[in-house]
Amino acid sequence: MSRPTAFVMVNAEIGEEDAVLNFLTTEIKVDEAYIVYGVYDLVAKVSADSMKELKDIVINDIRQAKGVRSTLTMVIVRE
Image (cartoon, rainbow, N blue to C red; front, side, top):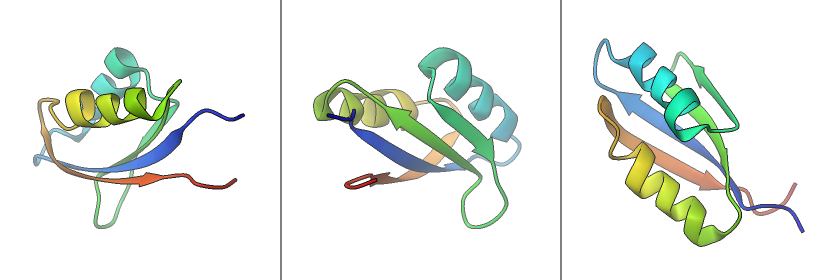
């Protein structure tokens, strides 16, 4: 059985994109994270051992991170 995984789209405060990317990749250790152009500033792929852990990472870690203005989370339901 595969681990619960989600893509999290992040809007950062202006000028905070690099700091948010650094936080996501060093403090939270997301699977992948990129600064992107478009409606969102960053996209991160996050996996966890359970849906509860995935929810906690998104709500308590990513959404509360300094420089994060808003997020949109898309949980993968089928690969």
